[in-house]
Length: 257
Length: 311
Image 1 (cartoon, rainbow over the protein chains, first blue to last red):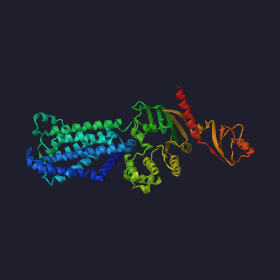
Image 2: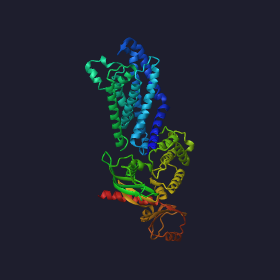
Image 3: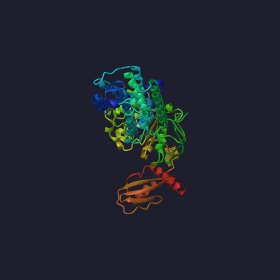
Image 4: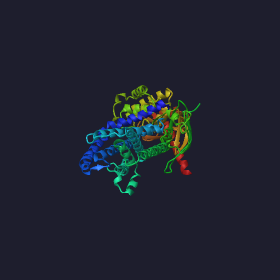
């Protein structure tokens, strides 16, 4: 396929993915908006007013970047895992496998679809946060870079999960038992400087900490972790996961017998 | 000149140790209407799955119009259209979007993709259903949808895995007409089917696969010439209690108004009718007991089974 044909094939997947999650917006875009509004009200307003300052900022200001990043992570991941697993389940993944599209186009198309949902939900949550907090933009470049990388990383993770899944239960295992705990322990609701030194070290093994901290740096100008270390870690995980997903797709893991 | 499809020494052993294909080789020439037949579990779908890139081959080589499927996959796949046995579209998507999206996967640009989608949906009688979700279609419409989808990029080689399964007779005939038209227009077609009259009616050449091996690969005409005998059913006017005595023919009473006659290869039917007339038996109509290809197929598979059990 020439470059024009490749771009048409990529656009076809992305258009289909975006159309899918916008068509079912009450299941994809509305729930995170409601959940995050409740987080803002309960944790930010009601409990946050009793907590006082966190990392030099009001508790509401502190948790807003974390909650935005949590929305991006969850939605990038769940869009790809549910869409690609459904394509496997209904066997319409075969439509792509018989076509001359190279595997990297299939993977990139799904990742962009996941990024689109993650970023749209992130934007909706950002708009909602304006009702509760005055949002600063310390470094727009950092915000854009970390949001893009994070959404790529978790969309790729969702793709790997979908390839390995054999049932709809398998689709929910990773988000429930890995993603959610890592997100909660990734400094969304607290600064890791509050933890004993040992647990600070353990927290640094959690990749989500780097994303939340870097995003918080982009908004507030303050981070628990060195910004360049964070970006290097995120890039490393993103490239590694993409390479693993592409290798699995080339081998037909979970999709070819 | 390269064949439309060349399969060389293809084998497949599944993860559970089941050997589905044992070094099979055959070719399908350009413009052919080719039948790949075999009993359930013989290896037909595995073969077509490998050609369609849905199954990984254990060893062997597949070439589509001279392009190696392993080394030049993109070029090879451009020539290929596949209509699978099972429905494999997004049931919640509309008919038009399913076909239009497939065009996009082949890198087809906007207007051309729109025109082709409309053309093939119209040809297959689905244009009026273009905005209907696929799950709302009847079984026959779903099969036609998969054919329209497979044709949207105008492949030179079309693989149809039991395309008329569960389709009523009228629709089956119209699908046959359509397939003959696109074959006449130059598309090479490979068909698997359990309806052997379908293969006899449509196909020029045939491969029969059984227990993972090719047991016959020839023209339909040559295959039918191998038949030793044919069985005919004669409907008669008289009410008979015992089968008439007719020399040189093996004849039995199927019921009081029906005779079953076995006619050996090269044997004339005239003598049979003369003998029946002499006994005041009037033949009202006559038909084959079963499809000729079916008789051949069954005897071949049975022989193969006997040979295996003797080993």
